[in-house]
Image (cartoon, rainbow, N blue to C red):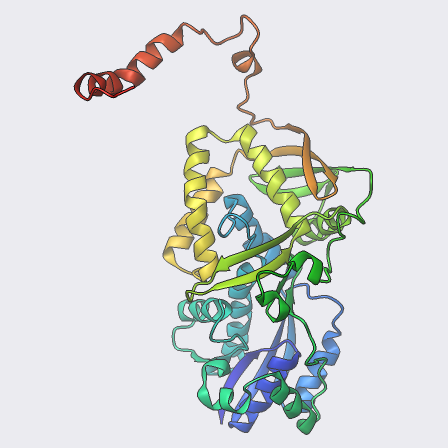
Length: 404
């Protein structure tokens, strides 16, 4: 019998795919990767998979790994896709692939199945991760298989299939959009959100953040400590990466921080509309950026910023496991050694205001920077500096007379 692992959520799509794969003669091993999805009874999900006929079903908790080994390195890069998106879903997909492929190796499965569509980015992230980690694995993407699409052209047919097979799913034809959640963020897309003229912030029922109108009328201060560019404590309490993210999700969410509505360029070429909320990571990005301003050398910071755009694209496209990314991650670990210290922020109605920052590695020299007289900076030094900087301009100016 053909065998495969299935990245399984227990929702409509993967429940239908599980039933379809078994009809196609596959022995299916279901893998639920716990990324911090909310209010889901994992035992119930696993029991449903085995009752439907899966050869095995297991849940794998990767929440701490997601934060510490995936999200925090991207945080050190200050990478945002197209300047906005904090990559919460993109970061999680290569980790899901790694967890599923480990199970495939354990059970001897030759295939890796997932529920990503042929239009989206997730298919790229799953497959490119699998190509790198297990080149011999057979990828099974039912939404790219004509036989599957013919049988299930839409949600109506999928719901009917579940009713016929007595597969319990929480799905309806009236659902206005789809969502994907982990401990880093929630993304909302499709359905009514496909109309760019509708207000996504008004349409979506957010799960992690309150509206600005409902946020407290008084701000709240929070102090975040970093070591080598990684968050290690909140308000003086050291904790794990996951606990820090979850605590800041609560704090940031309470003040309506971290909502965005964007139209982005997918890897496959089309534009798509997404609404996101990431309160904890938004707070961490801002605190990290403010500490870097204090501790990173100008040229190193500017080089990091230029490369951060490329890192964001690689994460978004799915190139997590490749030599280029490996080298870039080693670079950012070295570049972040001095990003150690504390940042104090005030959270207020969607805003993040810096209240103070300090570091033993601070490059800020008040004596040199002061606009007051004296200090360690001799203003006469600027004369020679500017004469040297202006030398090529003077030469060119004598040759190419500009009209002014």
